[in-house]
Length: 612
Image (cartoon, rainbow, N blue to C red; front, side, top):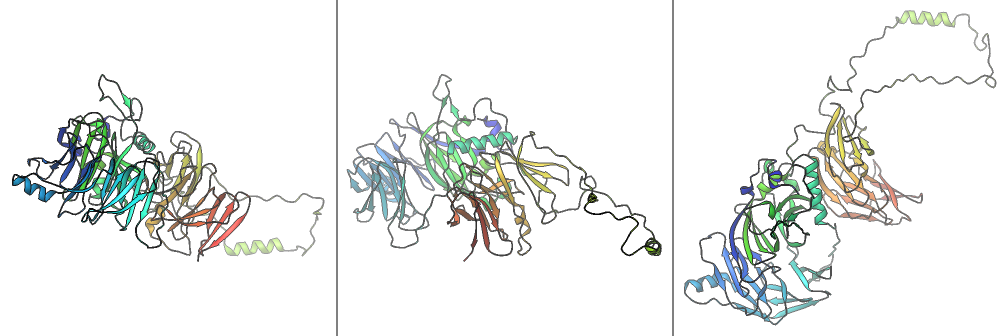
């Protein structure tokens, strides 16, 4: 693991600009594994077990709002989605109570005791709460059941059963009303649909190991020279338990929250462009991570132990909320050991700026943007004019040669059956003009160059899981992409287009790579970043082929499940799954002039698919 000065100093980032601890309180009872809650201006957490504490972030000098009504320790809480009125629901073993914060504050100013509305009682141990988008229904997860409670009538609308273990998370779908997603300790999740509409198609896009992703993120930064080589392991460890002992920890996901980077200027995000800002915050016990949903990579990592100003180094629960007013993020943490509760203010722009790669000094492009340089190995100079005879002299010489010559017979006739056939003399000449070596002198596993149009760029993949870009105009290695895949790349496919279609000039800078067991990745040569990761096809042991469509909108690949998959560039999931094969699909190819796809299987059979 890098030192904090190594992580946050590559682009001028300052530690104090990234995260600030705004508030710290210590409860008599531990609130670890309790669902905390954050809104735009308020943070909610249990204090001393049974008291619900509300801290206003807009006016920190305002007195804490303490709400009492539970007789058992509070286990979960959640804010509503509407601002007026702002609701918060809290749950314990005895009650599920709904609070109107505006009314509670007015009663406190009048010297009265604020009261909430009891939604349910003795439902069991509630681990998670969630209010619907219109604040009309609250989903209460108690044991392996989900109770849908009507906020207005306090009645149970529905009781959802099906999980085999305690339900630990629940969320309403923000873009489709009547849809609920739940997760349980039985290692499964369920999709609950309350409407009668058809067409609810869901499939798993990818499965991500957060521990491996953070290791790849750290390794890529070290190999790129953005930070120093760690002294020990890349895995996070902490010595917060005292006596200088380091304890290796895992990466349990405590909370997921949207991460809006669209308001951050492109200059502040470095290589992370505004077009690729579909990210999510992942709250873990050791830190916070900005995860890109398009390329399935960690864009930034914030480890608690790297900031000496933070009081909590290992978190047991976490809550996150974006503030649109100042583009900051509120993070509410509860210590894994002890009763500390802290409110953090995070600047995502400073975090991303400090950890993103700096802009490249030279701009790479697959289509040649300039002529061959005089110093380039491709420069051949001005061809010397050969001395030739005059046309009249050539005609005279031809007549002299043909004079007094027989039409058919010669002075000596050789039989073709007894004389050896004359050997073909190759008049073309070739010579070595340039020799380039890969970084580290590793074995090449794939090579790609465009011959359909004029280009100086050559792409090469190495056994060390790198992709190297060679600029033949300059006669050197232009860039190296480290940790391109988790395994060596076995094929590089460039967008070469077709003479029957037209594309934007920028589209030719896109190329695909694939590796066994790591799906297919789409790269942009201008930024040297992975723009999208396709993982919907199984390739666990055999290297299957990939192909670009002539229009540049689709990518096809083979798979081991006897199917060929077609992906659209703007989506992470496949658009077509072509069946009918009898063995592993090893190769795919598009027709350059018609919407057709040819596939080849391991048993030696070819198939042709035509778009409907």
